[in-house]
Amino acid sequence: MKFKSLKLKILTLLLVLTASAAVSAQDYESILKSGNAAYNEGKYVEAQGLYVKAIQADPGAALGYRNLARAYFWTDQYAAAAHYYEHYLKLAPTESADLEQVRGERKLAVSRAGEDVWRMPENIRMARQALETELGSGKAFTPGGGGAWGLYETLLRTGYADPDLVQIRATLTRRLMDELDAKMLPAPQDILPIASFEDWQVQAQRLVAIKKLQKDPVVLDLVNRRSTVVESAIALLAGQPEQAVDLARLARSSNPDLKFLAWYEIVALTRANKHEEALNAVETFARQLRAENPAQLGHAMALRALILKREDRSKDAAEVLKTLIVQTP
Image (cartoon, rainbow, N blue to C red):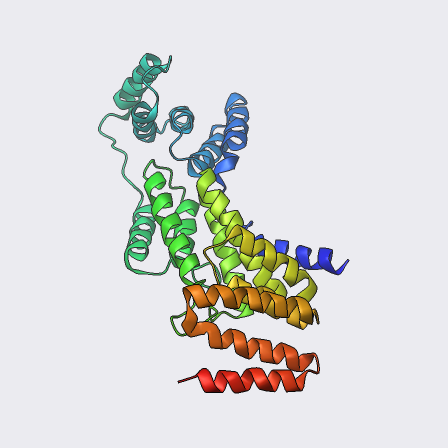
């Protein structure tokens, strides 16, 4: 029951952004279907809002632009209709059966628009500019859902629906992934990343944001693997060592590039009073350190001494520390 309770807490952390403006890329078909239902009932304004959300979910898919153009046409917004017809004609496959029909619809929309030309509303232009600035020189994600991610959500709330969201999402995903991994790398002099419980909560939120932006299976696989790291860290910092042991082992097998996860497993074993397992894990990791990073071997010896002390093997612990003092320059 304790394990289920912890998993529930972790899942709650991983869902903290589900009420945000961004919809996941996987929602495109269902939103488009709802938009079509509203359109067929003559609820064109409602359909417009749904088609905008469908485009935001998958801005590289052509059909949402055509349907949005038609919904604008039937509310006499001919300049907007022509604008979105253009997007469809650029994105639609050349073998699409309706290309000639859509070209005719666009021509009619342009004719009826007359001198009226679609212009990006000022609030959208400003939101887009702010996002581009933050993506270029700011933070991808800050506590509370700020940074470029927060500005991206603001842009979506303005009703922005444009094919360049594809590039915006790719850039934002890359920035989020860079920030995520940077927070998981220890400083050169450290064996662990310096991260508090709150830091790991923010990492969980970054992962949710990336999943909302992407449908690429390679990216999603990496997100799922990194999620195990977040879960293990949260379990350890939440004082759930038994669960942390299992989660740390899963994280290690899923993320062989993150060497510090061995320390999470060892600390979790120690806190769970599984001292022999912890000592064996220390020895295994010490062998790896001798081959890959001998400068950090002293940390393993110090941790071994600590575990021995907790086993009431003070004499053995003292011998380890004495050896460590002799070997330390």
